Image 1 (cartoon, rainbow, N blue to C red):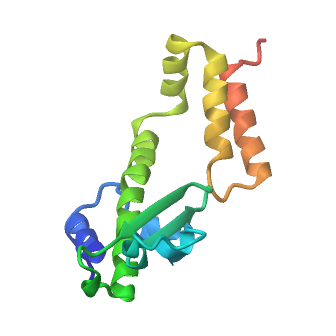
Image 2: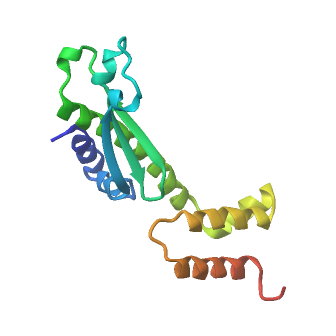
Image 3: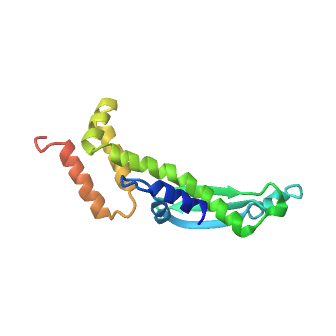
Length: 163
């Protein structure tokens, strides 16, 4: 069991409230790529052998957001490419966890009515429309028809029929 699975097991133990699971994160990863630091420089620097043992993991999430994880041993003699990939991937996943946690917290924190009140205080309904449009556009796996239906419901709620 790797450290991510151990963390997942500890976090899930006996908990039933909404939370971000390792499975949620892995399902949100569109692509995963690895390279060594030396692969990123045009001409290998003779004074930078550490680039030979720097492992980089690039995750692209379903919404297009990118995360970079990295790992490198203190001593080149300890380099193991497979272990480097595992540790770089874990580093990247640990960066995704709080981002998805924030998104879940936003979802749990309120309803469109509460968001409308908050935006009215901050800058009016126009700000609310912008926020909802961004939220709708960045929600993964939404068809354009679903986005338009949701946008119409939001508009009808905010701008009553008595306009």
